[in-house]
Figure 1 (cartoon, one colour):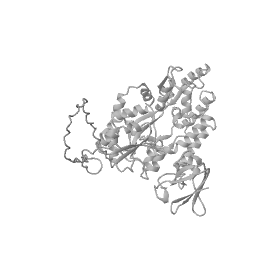
Figure 2 (cartoon, one colour; figure 1 turned 90 degrees about the vertical axis):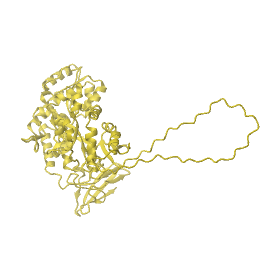
Figure 3 (cartoon, rainbow, N blue to C red; figure 1 turned 30 degrees about the vertical axis):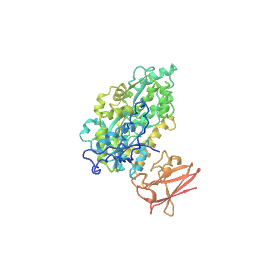
Figure 4 (cartoon, one colour; figure 1 turned 45 degrees about the vertical axis):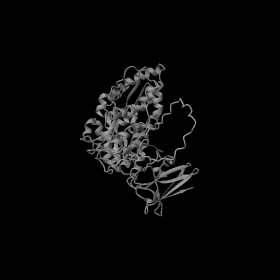
Length: 543
């Protein structure tokens, strides 16, 4: 499930610990001295009467010189654990030795690809990280759920861009160390389109000519989610959440069904019908393939696609979104868990070892994400970086409010329905807005659920979703809650969660924030969950 990379490079503690009590200095272990064994002294034998034979001509062999054995390495008693994906983990692993030398504290870097799903489960149970990496749009939900602690960057705060710090600030409190910003831009195939279009009309005029000449299949390829289509929506005045007079996001002003949003949908439908836009709700892989192969001369995407296009040998250029379309700007950052036993050491690792030009440059090279660390940003000389910078001048910072988490599912579904023509833009976006408002209005209040690793197989959009209606339990006449689900053979985990969230959850033996229940199906079958609200105990039956 997770690949753990543990780095235990132990050095003796030097100097005085300034951040956390780690025990006093220990005397170094003395190198063992081999015991000297005296050889028994016997009386010499009588001298031989014969003349000795001629002395050998060979030089006596030199006694072998053995290298002294390395002193045993003492394992540190304290560790800091970091959760990162496979792109960032190697960069952080390289910091372990220096961190150990400075603080006498070990560093464990775990490669966790599903941090968003794992964190709410592991952290309250004491099995989570001290430090984790995530996007700023998750911040509101994490703060609301008590999964992230405030952070103090001290003098290092001045080394970061304003937008980077703003992204991880909620209600005036800083919760993260930002390191990279990402936004979408318009990629074009320079062999097909030498000059960047300024408007959508100009882009489609060029695309139509290429299609008429048989050089491309479409003028533009779109992907299957709101994030990727948002630049079009904003060019028509669409928005997700409004803002108050002070610039704060207003969760009561939901713009999913706004006039601008519906107008952008009508425009998409019109151009799909004209054959200019692919009629499929493409995945990222499919959309990028269409661009790579020249079937589409344009694609809107982000820096995460750079390596793929470079490897494919596409002669591309990056420019701003046409017609002043505003992409989302997302900021990646490091956060400290409030469940960490060593929060000051965790912050020291971030400010002293991560917030350096060397580390920030390594993170940039590894992930192709423009840095928000100003010394590194100033040293960059990269045409692609400049292209994304120009496209991001008027980008909209993704709302970091808890309510943002309720938007994605219904919004993405509406976008798919519009692109494929399965529903009208007005009906699709109005329905999505109603669904989101229900969630925001507390539609999940009173819900009893068993989120777990089985949910996708049971029909949910994904696993570990405490708000999935498919797995919601119903109360029987006996006051017990029950649900049954047909599942394929396999090993699964789950726990009880109330009200569609993780604030109140019960693990084994009905313990709040307790261990996950585990169950297995040797063959395809049915699992039945029975929850006792008096004891908070879950009973699992396999048939």
